[in-house]
Length: 396
Image (cartoon, rainbow, N blue to C red; front, side):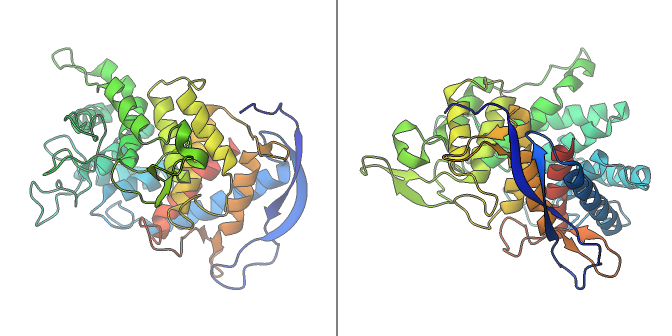
C-alpha cells in the first residue's frame, strides 16, 4: 500500500472544560483546532500534559506501602505502573520509584525469574497460574528503565530465565514463548512472545556487563520469527490478510474463511496485529519486509480507535498502548485511510485518550478504566499505566 506524502491535516481535538467535573468519571468537553502531521497542536499538547499530570497524581496515590500497585501477586502490574512513572516528572518520583524497585526485587526467585510463587501451584509460580514469564519480561524492562547499574545482575538473571522459556519442540508452538518457563503441555502464544522478544531486545545491552565466566544469553531468533509468522494471516485470507491472531489453536476473535471460502482461518484482530508487527521489528525484520508491510496495511484498512478491531471493547486499552508503541517504532507519522486524507495518528490517539479519562471530582485526579471485564482491564491501575505510557509517547 503506497503511503501518502506528509501534509498538513485538519482535525478536531478534545480539551477539558474549565469547570471541574461534576461527578466521578465525567468525560472531557470538545473544542476544535488543527495540527500538522506527526505533531500535536499546542493546545492539544497542553491537554495531554494536563491529563498526564492528573493521572500521575492518581497513580502515585494508589501505590501501596510495600511499593506495589494493585495485586501484589503479579509484579508485572507494579512494573507497568513504574514504567509510566519513570516516563514522567512527578514531584514524588524518586520516592515512588525506590519503593517500587524494592518491591520488585522482593519478587526475584532463585531461578532468576521475577514472579510470586503462588501456593498450590506446582513449582510455585509456574504451570500457568503464576504467569512467571509474563511477569519476568515486564519487570526486567522496568528495572532496565530505572538505569541503576546495581540492578544489572538481576536483569541478566531475568534474561536467562526468559530466554530459557523459549519452546523449541517439534510442533506448531515451536519458537514461541508462553506464560511459563516449564509446562505440562506445549503452549506458546503471540502475546507472551511479543513481551519476551521486547524484553530481550530492550535489555540486550546488559550482556556487555555479564561476567566473562558466564555464557551470554540469546534465543533462536530464526525460530522466533517463524513462530510469529505462523500467527499472521497470509495473502489468500481475504480481508484478514496481514493481520495477526493469538496462537495456533485459540481463535480469540473467532473464525472466518479464506477468499475462496473453502479454508477456515482465525480472524485477525487489532492488538495482536500491532503486537505481531512490533515483535517482528524487535526481531530485526526490515520494515520493508512483506510481513511487516502487510501487517501495517491490515491495520490501516481496519483503522479505528472506537474499539480493539475484531474484539470490540475487549483489551482496548492494551490496544491503545501497543498501537502507539508499534507505530512509534515503525517510524510512521501518517496512516493512509482509503478515500480519505492520511491520518495523523498521534493526534487522533491523543484526542481519544484525553476524552476517555475519568476525573475524580473531589481532587481532580484522573484515571482510565475499561467497563468490559476482560484481560484485567477493569483494573484501573493496569489501564491507567497502559494509557499513561501511550500519552507520554505521543507527547514526545
